[in-house]
Image 1: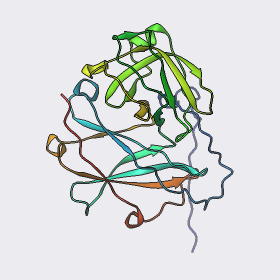
Image 2: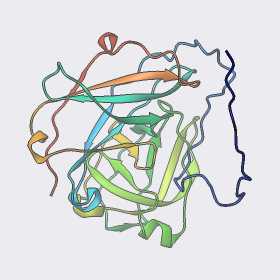
Image 3: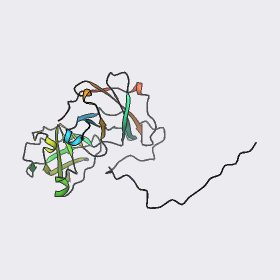
Image 4: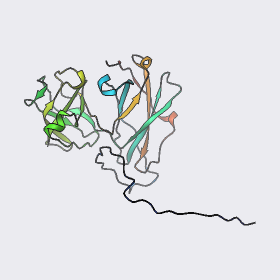
Length: 239
């Protein structure tokens, strides 16, 4: 018995399709890793409560994550309210730009041209780029610094690899408090490498369980969800 298959082809309209207009981030991962390469583990994530002005009408948490393995390529995020039943809430491609403050950041004015924000992104191998006065004021370089949301204009490399000095700061964005932040405080660059997760208001103020399932740079090698440690976070609804 034989079967005939008819295939109709059409010309592709070059120039109509294009990549999504999201900011990209540099990555040290390469596709030369074996398909079975071990992605390693995901570092404990940062689960951020997001001010309502930034999240929009639907309350959100933002999840930032990275992994230490050379072959780490990202992770799938699962969320649970009871630590038993988990729901997939999204995928993080590559590494979020997370790290710590390399020195104290003192309190300052809303437009702070006095103090330098020194950050160490060795954990995520993060690379930062600057912007213009207009870009800073439009919050194009938005960051989360231990609860304060701010933006920067200038970036200069620090002494060590993946350390950066950020100057000309626009501080206290979206109603967050301008405050002093000590060396070692958490830092996250709030760009497209951070996962935005809408939540109902009832899920704030109670423990949430997060599991992050790593994959290698080829999108393979993920362990079973039962083999992955759960991280607990309790976040407050931001108004």
